Image (cartoon, rainbow, N blue to C red):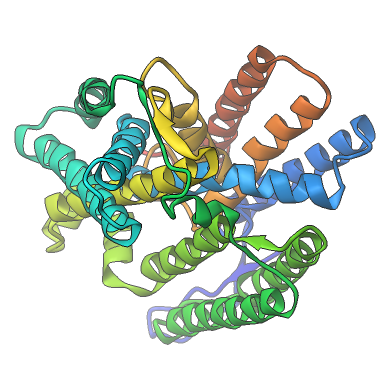
Length: 405
């Protein structure tokens, strides 16, 4: 069990205090219940299907989880400041349609149209946040109405055929590109080195501020887990064509997000605003600006996820983003973030939450699909997992006296 060093009035440290299991689950080992649950799911589906652990299926599972994982990463920034964005799936859809329209009808190159769609997503997110912070309307209402409006605009942007095909436009190459063989291991080595640098620098910075840093839980276990998980994933994907470019993009976003949250003043501000926005304001943090940035990041990431989804399906249409006419992308994105460990009540969550959450969602959907279970049952199970994750979160908070206000 980990310890916490408590300084005396004179500044000299005394014997470390032992923390309870509940306190550890809200800090150093927050990911442990999710990891255990994921392992249980993999064991269960392995017994249910002979092909679940095949290289082909694992590769497909990871690729299918990429879009939800990227979306969960985006919504995480909004949840951290104790807000919600119900327009994120609609942003995903309308920016994908805009990107396709620029390419197909106006002849834009993909390297121009894709960044423009991402910028548009950022602006939409920032606009909704500005409305929330300036007018004072709850983000739930603003983003719900915005999402409905964006769905209507998406219909207006589509052609009479209700679909833009993207075959032979260059966009399809995003999903089709694979990194295999030695190149995949070089990429793994680079990412592992960057991960190690991020973990070690974070631990060193906390020690410089006089905080106790358990080496096992803060450095050794995260680094060892990253190395083992990454090596297994690369080995599996190398045995089936290689690492898909969308998966690599997700990994890059996780790396950037981890740096922002752990090593920047902006990251600290996100947690401060989420824990207590009034205290953050009195401490000199520009709360409105931080929330606008969080919504903008979520909108931009949603737009990027829309491009990747369009690349996989070779087109965009009425159901792009899951917003027009229904869909589950919004539910899955929020569920992935929360199941992975991001609190719905703000101020708590780590970058691995998006990865773990999308793996849980992807595993459930993939495993039930292999078992021949109907889509209705998959939706029920996903909804149940979301409720269960939030319930566990609240139980831990109550047990440790760390309830959100």
